[in-house]
Length: 191
Image (cartoon, rainbow, N blue to C red; front, side):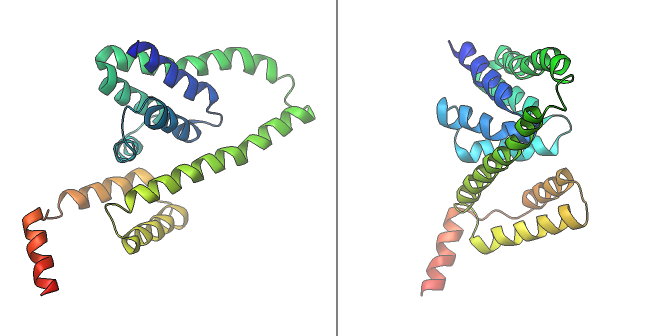
């Protein structure tokens, strides 16, 4: 039953994810976090961050890791197959038929109307990640990350994977405060 759930979750998210990998992320999130409750928000956002740093399509990376985590090697293969199967089916069926209809008004309208929906889905997911990140970081730190990330990606054209990798390295080499030292520091500050 678990393998069937893995297949359905990733097949459904891949089948409905129009516009490539980023548009499937909210759908994978809905299946993995909300529908099947295989992981929590924080875990999904960590996997997404690491997945964005690695080369290749994000949807198959998420499917591979989550499938492995839920169902082992068979779960990984199952999730990856469920992720790529809709693409294969749609490429064969739709590209052969839609290429002859691409200039028809309703086909153009269909393509153009989906773009805002994908934008809203990504915006909702971003808002959810922002809310979950407030638990670990303070709002000024989050805003600094947002502004610096926007400048680096949009204006300096630095690849997001490089930025994520640099932040991961930065986080690795940060000294970690233990709970007792944190409590002692707060007691000194309150005294």
